[in-house]
Amino acid sequence: MPGTPPMPPSTAEISLRRVAANGIDINVAIAGNGPAVLLLHGFPHTWRLWTEVIAGLAPHHRVIAPDLRGLGATTKAADGYDAGTLATDAEELLTALGEPSAAVVGIDAGAPPAFLFAMRHPARVRRLVLMESALGRLPGAEDFFAGGPPWWFGFHAVPGLAETVLTGHETEYIDWFLTAGTRGRGVPREIRDAFVDAYTGRDALRCAFSYYRAAPAGARQIQDAADSHRLTVPTMAVGAHPVGTALERQLRPIADDLTGYLIEDCGHIIPLDRPRALLPPLTSFLAPDRHT
Image 1 (cartoon, one colour):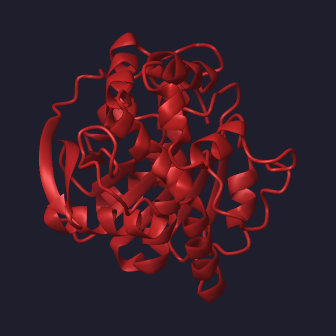
Image 2 (tube, helix red, strand yellow; image 1 turned 45 degrees about the vertical axis):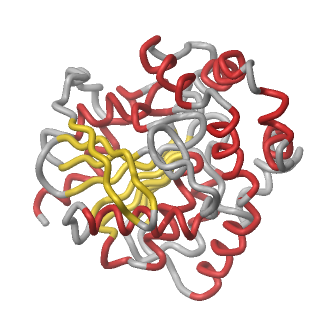
């Protein structure tokens, strides 16, 4: 792609709302006007992961960036952290906001629910973008998992263990992920502090780790969806380090319309590590929405 346009100012007019959907109150950042784009973050993030992306998309889209179930300022629910329930959260959030459809973008833990939303309700998902995640055990990610899952998957999955060990040490723990996820470059201090605050306290950690504890259920839901029908929504798989092209390879056999995009020299937290490299392919892929 020729040249990289200058970054737009990261001062999009953002309003924060609390929206009742699927039995919880979802904290959601909203900016811009136009066809809706729903942004689903992962761990250890909040909606602020998308700060630069919101600025880039808001001139042409209504950008909707929630804190996922249990994370940030959204209800710290007792359960419902499987990908299927999270997909319903997303669907009902759009309904509550009066949006019949949206382009849906998911990264990390936000990618499986984005995928299931598109599989279950393709009429409501105009375009799908999935980044830096694996979709359960669908074929194609064998190389990524060759040495076993990342070490923290097992640590987080043991009920009660990680929150007991980490309470009081949240800052150091979150900093490790933010440093590793940007290949040592780090994230803006304001955003880093917001993430640390969001994941401080035993109940906040319990909610975060519930995503990992519900992963087997999500993997079954993903497999069931892939076994029963194809992904018909135009989709882009965006990889960086460490997932690379594994997600694209998982999607290739089941997707009717798939674009793969790999961002070089970029860590896992793409929207914060290399937003200048992400925005051109993202805005280009979403551009048809401007005319729908």
